[in-house]
Length: 99
Image (cartoon, rainbow, N blue to C red; front, top):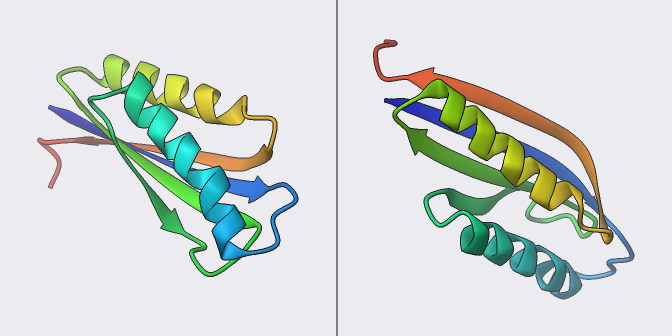
């Protein structure tokens, strides 16, 4: 079994409050959950900053290749939102045989 972890560091557009930030971030998270119901997704960082956020996505699969494909697809889905700028994406792959 393989577990993939994707961390997306995102710069938000014209956001002036945490309330506006939520109105941008929540629909992105909901869209990832809707398109990829088997993944776990949440806002995981920069919680107190207005214009930055970090979204974490976790994938569990029988193959490393499938984990990679799903993480790539999730990254692409988020990156295509015009109201945000994807600053970085970090992927990690864990195997259940590793200690």
